[in-house]
Figure 1 (cartoon, rainbow over the protein chains, first blue to last red):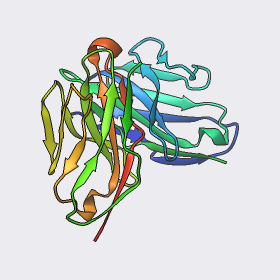
Figure 2 (cartoon, one colour):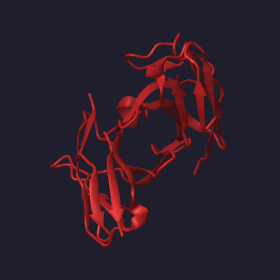
Figure 3 (cartoon, rainbow over the protein chains, first blue to last red):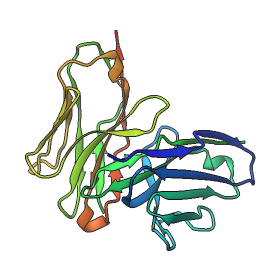
Figure 4 (cartoon, rainbow over the protein chains, first blue to last red):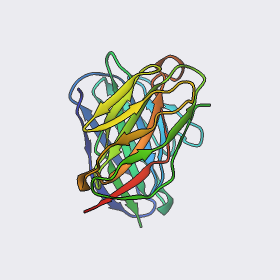
Length: 114
Length: 114
C-alpha cells in the first residue's frame, strides 16, 4: 500500500498570504486528488492533480485560488492563495494506487487563517 | 450525480455496545463502497471496502455488506471499545464513470465511553 507524506501538518497564516502544501507518495499512484474538510463537515473534492498538465477543478474551485502542480507521479503541491478566514480548513491529498480504486490519504494540513 | 447519505451523529455508546452506522448511496454506475475512519488529529484511513453487490468488507471487528437492492452499506460492530472513538465516513468511488474520484458522506462522530 502507498504511504503519502503531507506537510506542513498545520499552519497559522495571516489574511492575504499564501501557503503551499506538499504531498510525497512513496510509490507511484495513478491519480492524485486534493480535498478540503471544513470544520465539522465532510470532504469536498477541490481538484484532480494531473501529471504534467493543468489540474482539473471541481465546481466552485478555480486555479487562481488553488494552483496545483504535479511534476511527476509521486509528488504534488496545492497552494491556497490570498487567504481569508473562510479558507480555514483541513486540506488532504490522496492518491489511487495502481490496480485498485482505494484511496490513500495524507495526514492532512490543518490551516487557520487569522 | 453520485451521493452518499450517512446517519447523523454524534453517536455515544458504552463500551461493548453494538454499533450500527447507516449509509445509503445513489450512483449512476456500479461503484465500490468504502468506510474510512478518522481518529482525532489524524487523516483518513481506509477501514474496509466492498467492490460489488453482496460483498462483505471486514476489518478490526467492523463489517459492512454491499446491498444493491437497498443501495446501502451499513457499518456494524458487535462490541465497541473506547479506542473506536473517531469519525466514520462512508464513501463511494467508481473508476469507470468518475475516474476514481470519491464521494463522501458527512461523517458520523462516534464516542465510546468506558
